[in-house]
Image 1: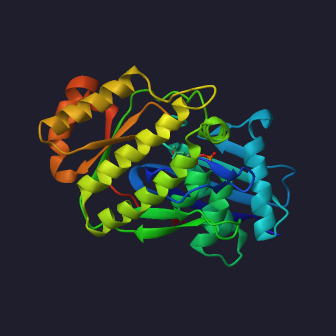
Image 2: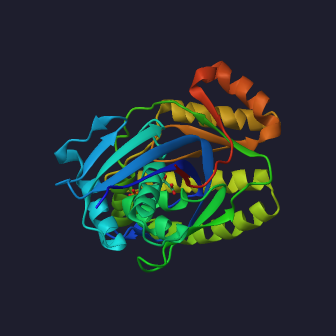
Length: 326
Ligand code: DP6
């Protein structure tokens, strides 16, 4: 049989209501729903070639072959995928990132969304984007949302089959934007996988978090409906800080903040005090992302440039869902 080949491109997403904690570590089923904005600036393009002649999977990330001892997570993922699509062939996977890897800019979200899309497209089976979203989830929880553009919501579900994302607004019709402040783009010290596991197991506040997210999801939906960027920003900021307070309350305690993260948060607060509405959020790394209405872009860039330098600021608009490249 000839090789089965497809290429898919997916963008990263930033959670406005965070996913932090799994009920099922193997199936990657979360404790809560979550909601995100897909970004146009950061993405992964992945080509998958299933071939009868291969004796194992090979993974190339940015043209570098991943060595055997580091590819267990990817091999496990390919085994899950093979079972779902009913194929036994091994594959060559070539992935190109336009994202600083593992720096809390959610490279795993675009990576597993693109890989899941390319696998389904190459396989020749009938599939829906929900199938892609479910498979992406098995690689990395946040990837389930990167299948869709704009604003998307991951419904937690309770089985492998009903835990996937759905679009809220694929094309966002209001001026929400984000500036990523690149404070440290080296690999993160505590992976989100380990970080959230430690939190679920040891934070005395974890049950409260589950309740908080339920409320935040409700208000976030209302805020989106009203196109109220300030309310979206306020909820996103407090939700992120509550997530980060879980890490501090875990045993052993840990944090993703560094000194520059705190400085960036203070700068955002200073802008706010001076009447420029903007809000911050952070993921499993020290980089800070600023949410605002695009009409305030130039003022915010000007002020943040004075402290961090313009070359460390990346402006992102809402981005598209998964695309297949012929
Ligand atoms: C803070 O999706 O990277 O970005 O499912 O273990 O691969 P795994 O975790 P991952 O965690 C993302 C955590 C977050 C919040 C979010 O994106 O919702």
